[in-house]
Length: 307
Image 1: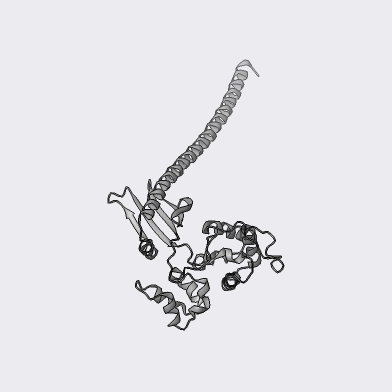
Image 2: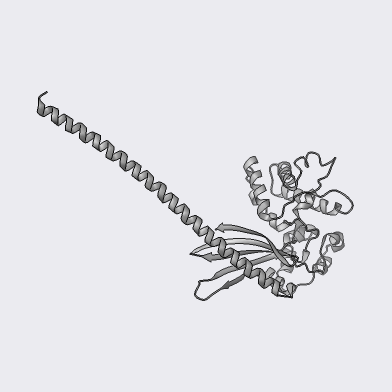
């Protein structure tokens, strides 16, 4: 090989090496760019969530302040229970939907774990019977395992396996629907039960630690039909009438026995205990939060983030 050929070979090798370096550098640059873009988007998302949470806190404070200022709570909540209330400005800069429901409108899920005695027997029975009905109606694959998970959350991991010997002394309890949903999700992941997502839990159960009675006037038609062994379509027709008769009158005049469940029901007393959900718009996105209002104060604020 003469000198010219050596030089040409050296140049080719140099160009190949330079090309390899260039491609490597480009690869690193592209990789760094992707990481930085990902980080930037994450920071933007975090900033948006923080902004949305601050806005939720402001709405939460304003709404609960209004609640406290209205003396006629029965009128206020009766209206809110019957409709989703849209609030907003004409220019669209402010927009939210407020929806409220009676906090104790269902069978308290925590009744499943009450100590069995004369005082609690009716509550324990109705909770267990309702759970069993739903398990059968919706073909829940392993209702025993789901009960175990519920009892764990209530404070006793061995409750289900030892319930005949020692009933649960409730320590913690399930205090929100979101908490209950997380338990059901754990069950679904563990058991791989495709049917569990079909169960309309909120139509039958409530999720409040202290609730000891059902606010039947605001219960779902499904729960009322179950409690009094009535035709669901008949109950739905009654529930759709704004100035309907009392639950007691309706049940007794349509073949049911109100007295049979009376000790479980609130009756004519109005409970100032509600749970509200707020969906609001911010920067062309929608967010949601939830809270409870009972005993004259707001509590258990939960922010669900972007929908």
